[in-house]
Length: 303
Image 1 (tube, rainbow, N blue to C red):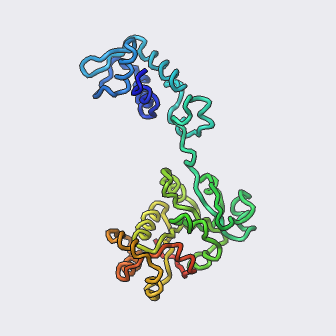
Image 2 (image 1 turned 90 degrees about the vertical axis):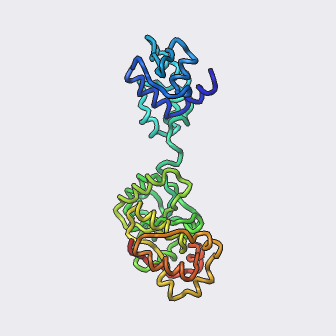
């Protein structure tokens, strides 16, 4: 078997294409290029069919041969197996069906969120339905299925931009946030390497609790906060409290190279405009790590 056909038979989209055609059982199938998976199959096995006038003529029994070929190469029966269902299963389940369990299985981290529970131990245990037995220690975090988190009776969830800040954020930092109320707060990492974070944010947007975003105090941070706030239907942004009253302090904390690289960024939410103008006018770019290390007073700004 040609390598190009081997690769094609390990491509989920091409297998889905074959399934759609085999279900129809058409005698003629139009195609555009010779790398079409059906064209590759008839080139490999002429008993399946042949090409005529930009169409593939499937011979009697040709679809049966295609079904057998795919099953011998992948373990998938194109008529018996639901490919969309396989995509929702993990590798442990799919290894019972598929020769290459990576072929259709969902990503190992799909549906998981990195988070930390803050509050006193008794409240955290109760809020998480005994999922944990104490608040999360500093520099530690949990990998939690989003469906479990949605069931927790928490008061707030804060999406945090940077991983180090996420790991170090603790109860003392929660107390720095004016306008944040409640007993139990979940801080969650925004997961910028997580290809499935949009689905996570969609689930969070339906969570019955207050939802906030905390990012760097710079143009990029405001843009990230604006974007995530829309995705999770946030109640507010967590920003420095009246930073324009302490411009010298913020200037001393700024990383000028970061600011220079962000001059093109804009935001559109009216609630962020005073902060955008302050960053612009004072040429600021303050990492959130610096904000929490200096115990900078913070406040909730309506989204």
